[in-house]
Length: 313
Image 1 (tube, rainbow, N blue to C red):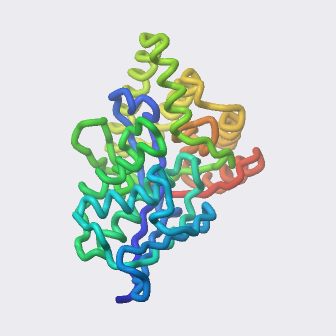
Image 2 (cartoon, one colour):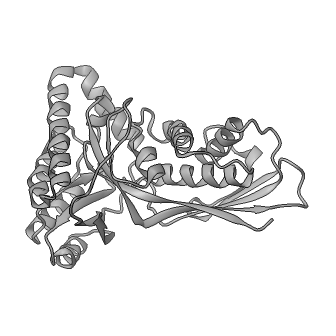
Image 3 (cartoon, helix red, strand yellow):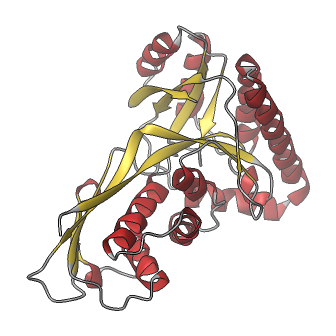
């Protein structure tokens, strides 16, 4: 049997991060310029049930049985085997690669899980449907984020722009008119689990003001959906700026993120905000037609470790 592989895109949250954990809507889109990939090669000389894993990005080279239960890669494999009622799979080697920066708000963990779940289930001759892939990836996301919203595994599994409210059916968004984003990475890795937990502590200490912030963020997501589906992309800019200010009030921005947001706006971005858990990771900037290269140059000059241009369509 030849090697088989599965890949999954990254993602960015356009609107609604953090508030989505508290029942507010969020909008996220896949980013195909970066991706995670899982490659499975049969190992006919190994003992049945043996699984060897390599993941160069995190310097992992180990047997499945030697990994702790809380290891996300092992958890994705275990969840798939359990879902398919397989106790002793044919021996195989799994190689995981990714061009998605870790802990940067681009959905690295969910993309790796989705790629592994699809590759393992396909190798076992029973490819899982999207609904099951997303559900299993969500369980693994709990290891990354503690109390995940579910948005990462959803948008990455379905590879589509989504309007997401926790616990409700997924709604895909019609992109009436493509728009350009510049994504700039601070180079600072901050696990979403940490920022989500910090926001929860703030909320638990004094719920009312934070509920108001979450509600305001949710209203921005509602307005943004209408704007996107109407093709009035220019109007997204002010909504992004307001969303960033609300995230600052949640104390999940940082001087590095604010510096990149300001640089993008000064270079002509229609709007810019942090995207993801915050404190590090990425900002996204809405580029007016013909200005994406200028914005990219500006954020790189302002200290972005990496920046790239994508089109949401």
